[in-house]
Length: 62
Image 1 (cartoon, rainbow, N blue to C red):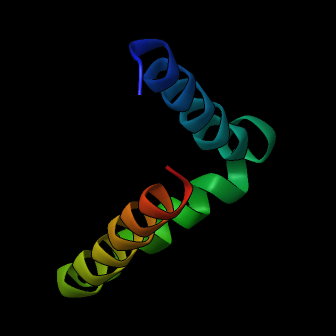
Image 2 (cartoon, helix red, strand yellow):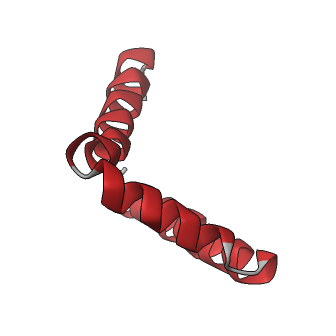
């Protein structure tokens, strides 16, 4: 991948991440507050699953 493609990917991630707080700030704030109540082990499992899914998708589509 070229540098420009990586910047495009980063831009898409930033847009997707920004949609929630931009369109639904109160729901997003409540969601973040609920996340703080989850135990660290559960958050690590969720994060690991997301990273694994992302790597698999990168392998499939690259």
